[in-house]
Image 1 (cartoon, rainbow, N blue to C red):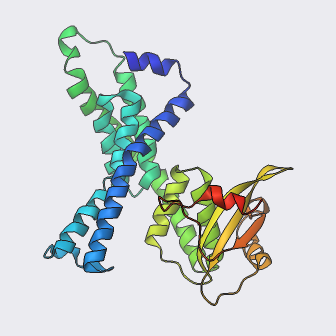
Image 2: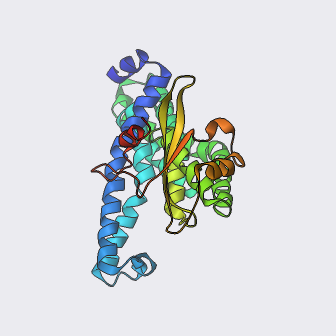
Image 3: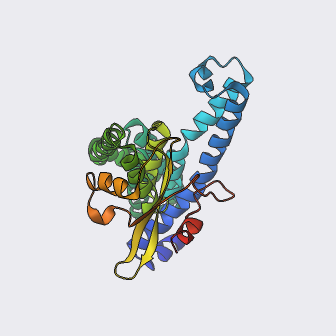
Length: 294
């Protein structure tokens, strides 16, 4: 009952935030492991090793399959530990199931996150049910995981997952449509989405889309950060890396962006760089980028 008492002392928002951060912290090693292993396979067998990995004949193909399948566990891992953070061990099975359903329904990171929060809350409520002493020992290892997985899973499949899958389809279709037009606008929108919620669902939606879309054209890379502003507190600013031979001005870029988004979303300032600054961990160095606008 200790976790119930702790959660009573926190607001719902705080509990959800802490649970999401816990899930992300457990998911990161899965993503890093899958990424590094896949990269090793590509170094050994070439960039297109994934096209022949199913044959499982060479060492590179086997290594790629291991890394690629590890990626598939990212959302289930996230969902399992979000539910665990809310409801302790009985939440792991239903949370994991929500992550698997998210993949089947193509709701991605957002679906796994929402399903896990619901699963964790549902398990938490089930743990409050008073049962005979003879059943108390098997409740957290049998009845609660089975019933919560079944009920929340059906709810996810028939009710919750449907609009999320529809929304994800809209977002992906919108980004794909942008890729057929102005490539800079696409990059700026994706950059804004990735910077928007510091690793949250919008960030992951954009990141997963970029992994599946090889956009080329005017720009090579872009990043968006927030910078201080006396009037509004903070405004967007962008750094852009153009493709070799491409020529664009700051005003041209802003004009293109205004065709696709509201004025307040357009970066106040845009700088052109040879490469996006990276941290030692190879992430976008947002802190350093902000200093470029001082």
